[in-house]
Length: 297
Image (cartoon, rainbow, N blue to C red):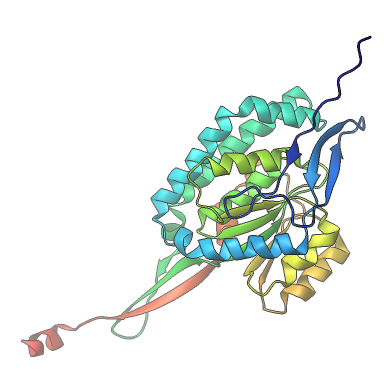
């Protein structure tokens, strides 16, 4: 007598330091769609996972920020290429998570285009936002943007892929490294996107992706003393207050992207998103006068 075969659900691991470990807590949850169909086993990340991810991000920070801007552009473009090559898988996962076929195609297209958009800005934003400043002395005075460091991100919870890509791309385009908490209800594309990153020449630790409950992990993202900035993409007033209080412990930058339509290019992509996680460094350089040059001879 034939019996119905039980599907073997994929276990979606987290992504830390270029590796795919299971959460150290051993906890997981079953992701479901609106029809309550089981989609996958997903890790419930812990505080220890957050710490491990931040350590990995800090270790990668110097190498990534020190890369030539055109090389970061090449790598972001490579991510877009790999995402294009796995289009069918992402469309399938988006449909499983309640997107229509048309919306899934639109989301993957926008995600690819957004990566290419920020790849194009990698070697341009410093010229646009840097300056040569007039000073009342015999000096050159330059102001240039520099990456702030390690950025933690609570990604948009109602978006499986596009919101995730839209917040990661400007952060790493600007030379920062990041730790991202993906959507709790729509986690499939986030871990698959980690697989894309892993095969796209992105050094381990530059992007770290965790899955789990924002209600449990946000405070650890905000209070860790080796984090330089935090991005929060939801609109919960209590959580915003918590983030601001915890972030004040080491005066980390707080960025709230709580009202952005990630499908609208006009408000969802801009070089100003790169600048949100930049510091401005001003350098003075003395100018040798003609008289002193002659005196030197």
